[in-house]
Length: 127
Image 1 (cartoon, rainbow, N blue to C red):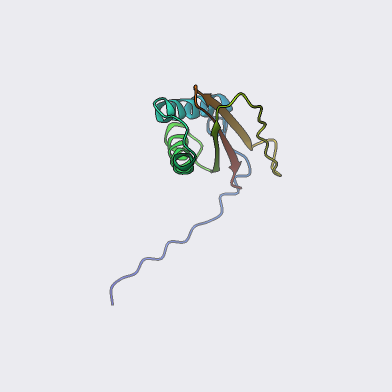
Image 2: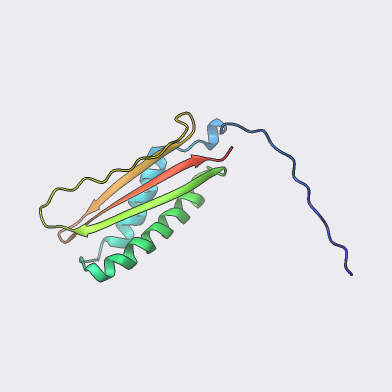
């Protein structure tokens, strides 16, 4: 049998993020805006296509947030809502239990003549 190496990791006891590793909503909002604008700028609303777009956008936003921001110990949760632009009112809300000292969120709403899309990103710190 070959040599098997077993890695033993010790606890870090890091209970809060470093100042340079905090979830900054302004940076995350800019990332959401960039991804949503690039993805939706040439799209017209279609109920069938919107199902696929929400999944694609969620994955692209999550990947962009992870690569463009320095928040290594955060769990990133992304929610995207897409609807038809028909002069209606809509309110998107979320609730969760978190630590107000380290957890945060950001959102951006994109709209054109045929659709609206709201992207929300939640960052929950791993202790």
